[in-house]
Length: 238
Image (cartoon, rainbow, N blue to C red; front, side, top):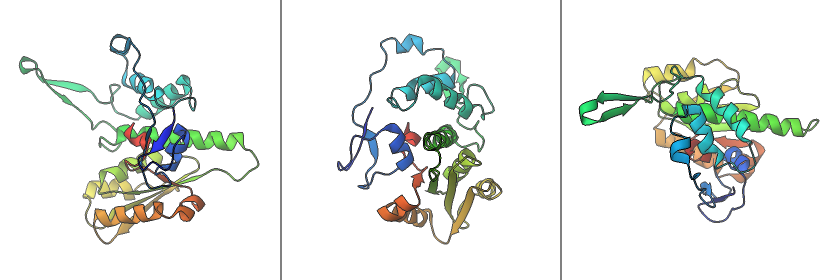
């Protein structure tokens, strides 16, 4: 499985490299060069799988040789063990007569649907970086500086997904006075040494513009090994 940029100037990238890089060097988003096919028996084989196992099956289709199925299963199990229900995103029946159901997406650590992606992404970052460092002992350690902008839910979910992760520093920009008190408290009361909150006088768009400017400076991006947790990161979408 290889990835290319939507702007067409970068191709042939591995799953690991696009996860760690976030935004392509030409400013585009990474997407698969080809979409994988589902197994012929997926409708029956996957019908009764627990959430973490189903996630592992789907993710396996997109990682190529960068992760084994066992490694992916370990990462998804670890990621979704932080939810307060084994079903992770339970489908609750409201009215059987009208076949009305609701998918509950608030069972993660910050009660935001973005916990589903960001709990996994944090573990993925840590796994890839630890593996790189183990493969290259005696060299400067591989690290990543994650920069993100938030209007509230992305920031707290990203912080809870990345707090305490080895070789990861996370900087979250939020507009001063423009996030809910609960979300601000979720972000600013996390005391892990690798978490850094930055309050910006302005709007969310101002925060996002700063992040885009940082990623738009190739030398700065490379020097500080910038990584992304906003939806520009393919693993966040996956």
